[in-house]
Length: 419
Image (tube, rainbow, N blue to C red; front, side, top):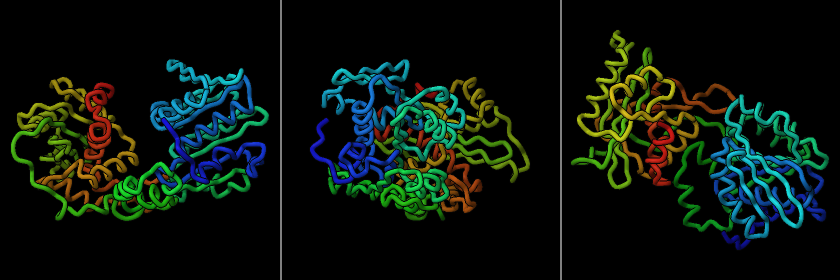
């Protein structure tokens, strides 16, 4: 990978810790702002250069939402650049360890994931000379604070980057708004700060978001999510006829409910587009009759209608129903159930026309017109729990199957890993 030039803000990231920099007195750096604004790679490269220039034989940590996302979002680009600039990098994947050497110096960089409150336990007891927290706003506060507490070596520094979330988010309130008090250098990025992006690519990203996601990921604002979740979608305008003939493959998505409604969606693929061609929706509170797992399994078979299913993507908490489906011979994939990430993925795929809701899917079209963000103050956004059952099964499908197939062409490997 060749880096032709850096923008002024990227150059500031690269050299803020240097002995001649006006920013060298800071103990931390925080970079937030738009997607694809060029902050992540520069943060990683600067972090390693600082560590290698300042220490010998010390331990550091790269932290992400998960080790998998850390490798994908940061290391995949960072390691080739480090090697091209003369660093020796040896990775032990089994230990999540990266050893970097240059000029007779060598340091160890651990890869750590902060996916939930229990993740803090994995970083306890480690002594670090520095930590980089990639997408820090997606990590639990307990994990972040434990990582910070591990940096007890003299001269240690902290590195944070993220895209914005809501204005009540703890990191925004405790670190960005208090960056001066915490002696942290704060830099805000837009896509214009990334010279590698062409105007066409910038426009493509701008057209992929709307509402709160546009303000956050394009304008880089810490703003509250309000109103309709899919505010760009008009059921009367955007629903499409069911494609004629047999489709290339079929998947059913499931949001399982007992007291709450149960929603299934039948999706068919044609030329890279997934169509929700048919659905099943059952509300036991309305009928006064609760169905059993075997009865729901029979209904799913009717929805499949003789089509050979690639898999069934199911709510991962529906343990008994998953067992019933597997006993009936269906291949079941437990859905990716990260709500906010799933909503972002679904919105992007809907806007790009990679998933389409067909006429006749009345409950999905009804819910999408009612699906709203909760207005209750909280640290993270959440949609209202009303009118969300078809929305959940659509989100499971989008995040688990359609997004992987659309962006990577790795549908088969995804279902193998999640089965």
